[in-house]
Length: 290
Image (tube, rainbow, N blue to C red; front, side, top):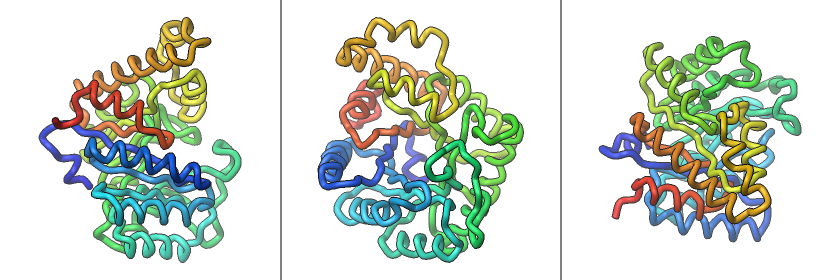
């Protein structure tokens, strides 16, 4: 997968979550079919808190590998799993032909900001999970999470940077950031990571701003601040979903363009299992080869 990020031109990747029912399955595969023609660097599939969607993650990612030409990455969390269970999941990934894993410690089930308690026979840190992935199969490409404004449980940005460096030192090949709405936090993190001697790809995670709910929920989930003036810019469209979406796509495209101007290798889109907004943005940015 890192070869796909080393192209001579910037690219993009997309993230899906495993569907919960038949309708969701249909919607997801419509999105995958539409985005496949745009040739993303890779597609990732999330993993529910406590492994709640483990089987669906394996099944969805395995089908992407079997039925498409896309490069697939499966997420894996340490929440509520013993080391033996984690090994079993990784072997299932390997046997399905999944070569790429996003290794994250994960949030507590039910309350992402609640107290995190490790499984008695499990792992406590994402760096330990990275080492386990490489131990099960050194051929896995491993990604980790990064936080432009610090993880909610970090003491400060310095300790957060140390945690990220530790994950990279444990064997991570790249990192993907939590979502954000302005470029400065990402760029500061990128520069501080390089100053610490880490030069793995750091992909900015972007959620297309398509609704007022997205505007509210994004900062709540990520801890990233709302950029000055953004609420005022979008306030005239709060009662018009079509107009809000159009303005939100403009905002997202401008953010991505600013990041590309800074030389990012790829932009990772949180798609919410939709394809239209991401497709519009990557076309506007010229990330699709004609």
